[in-house]
Length: 384
Image (tube, rainbow, N blue to C red):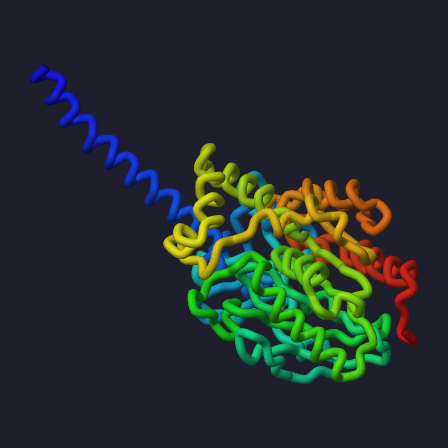
């Protein structure tokens, strides 16, 4: 009996400690999902040749992609543009610099590889204006690019980035005659911060987009097309099923969208080496108000409501999905599932090789044609 008491005295604290450690790990994983973080440094600069204006990067599935990209750096330069791949071996890739780097400039090794390319609306050489859109979160900055159509396109950026992500789509839409409203939303670093400062994964952000629709309607828009990038796709989908202006939403363009968060978070957890059941435990924590707040969220995350494959029957407008089968960050599975569930509404041309939100960069002509053809086939035009 004495030995049993001794064993219990040892085992019970160990189990409590294990449970506490597991709980802390679950909350840490859940926190990573909802709390905005700085863009990760996912590229390494090996060298810069200022004479030839080339840059050598560690080779990754992103840095080896053909096309035009951006690179966030530290040191003398901030954001530089990259052109074609000039050469590559097993570990490195050499690309043309499209932003001139002067001799003697200090460029640190750590960098962030991006599909943004354009960092400012002035780079597009189009008419534009800064505006503020009043939302439940407060005044949200936006860029407005005027054009003649009474159908406006409202663009919504993704998680962990800002509205500059959307600039790539403005020229093709503007050339087709569509005004563009490129918006921000709560907790994205440009729009106001909510009480918690955390993402709701689309469950709250759609309200800021809804006020952007109201703004467009006041400025003369007859209807709107929502274009969402990555998490912005989840926001656009939530707007489409929740907005009081649903009858004015004429279509959706979804670029590398999050259609179902559970699919995305399980994929990302597996890629990060996390084992089951940790991802599901983290999502369960985010689904309950008390544990969601302990994880940093403002309210419980309604994963069922955010699953738009399950809610496909509620969708009523034509949808264009642009999603690479080799996305690598937001898998295209849920996008394909949505197309299979609603073939009457969803058009999804096949793309591959391109990585997450980098379809424009990899295949600008194919990406642009997919958009302009879809707009024409659905009856959207500069005169309507």
